[in-house]
Length: 162
Image (cartoon, rainbow, N blue to C red; front, top):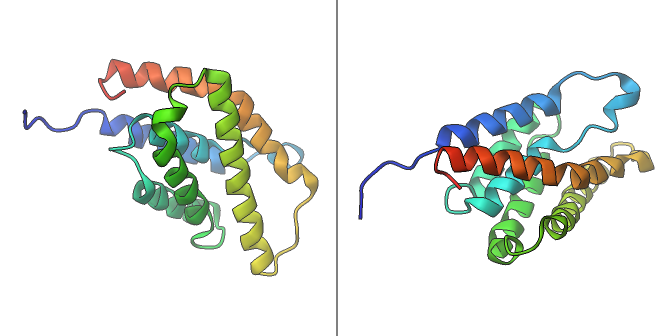
């Protein structure tokens, strides 16, 4: 057994920071509704591939950072991200065996759960209900998952993390 420090923590942090920047990057009004859930996608990737390094508490901290950066209700994204991180962490052994298109469907279901929790928080706080276009980013997450998986897996292999 070696006492070598864990490798690749900087890659996890850098990918989450890039996802956070993509999530809060200003976009035109008509296009903003189609913004993919970058932070949720990256959180799911790390929970599925290195659950011993990135789990529920890391997802909760990431969600709090997203809440602060986006100006949303404090804890709103933290709740959703920690719930989907728990599900991904519990099922990661099964999901990693699936072909990439089936993984994308699993990720899509978790993105729907996260959006549903955000919708519940909006309703509980008396904020106006969003339009049906509110669900479109989950479909974009479904389409982006294979690309994100390939890119982050390759980077993770290069630094010895995945």
